[in-house]
Amino acid sequence: MLKLFSKSQEITFKTTIFPDKTSQVWQVDDTHGNDLSNLRVLWLFEGEHELAQLLQLVYLLRSLYGSRIELHAPYLPYARQDKPVSNSSTWAVHLLDKLIREAGIEKVRVFDQHSQCFFESESAESFHKSVINHDLICFPDKGAWQRYNHLHVSAYGSRYVWCEKVRDQLTGAITAHTLHTMGHQIKGARICIVDDLCDGGRTFVEVAAKLRAEQVAAVDLVVSHGLFSLGKDVLHNAGIDTIYTTNSLLHNRDGFKVW
Image 1 (cartoon, rainbow, N blue to C red):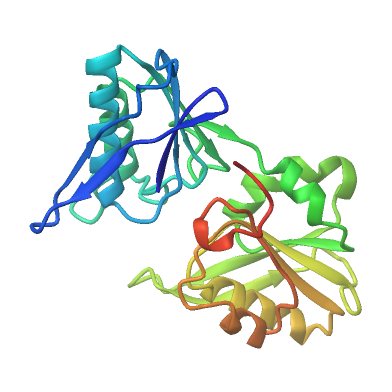
Image 2 (cartoon, one colour; image 1 turned 30 degrees about the vertical axis):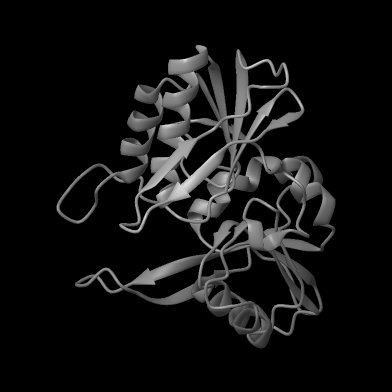
């Protein structure tokens, strides 16, 4: 979904989908004295067809009105495709960066970006502070520790555990997770797993199983972006009690507000 704003005023426009599945963005409402010189596009991602519509909208606005445009995309598509191009990786987030900048978008804001090297990324700190009040934090892999440990040093210090992915050296496939308790007694503890994104949730299912085997009192999950492509039941059935996420994706309307 794309929304257009001048300051806090929403500006309407139309999107037509043709029989061949292509689209046209048109009829921006310029009839009520709206200031179209500085605009913000809110992109609530639902599918990559919206990228073509975004580029059309920006082209229209800049061509007709000379608009300066900021893009706010709480969930950034392609963010996990952040490895340099090879025959097994297209580096899609870099391509997205090129398309956005060449379209003339002057500023891009995202929320808790997976790779911190492309766009201005809003921190997950406020979100975490609103929901995390546990005995220990669990980082499900080294990447999560690198991403979030600095947010919790003042409140939690060394009160964290983490999991290490065990890979098959021939195939690279993840075969298991090793739980590092860092010397903490975790039996009876309330633990919160923290990461940036949940897709199907396999990692969190396996980490929850490791924690439950240690007889912890509670396991909660905090993720900035909740795709939940296999549903939430698979997570709850694995022993995760409460799932916290944001409204960065439209199907999580009741999540912590980031737009």
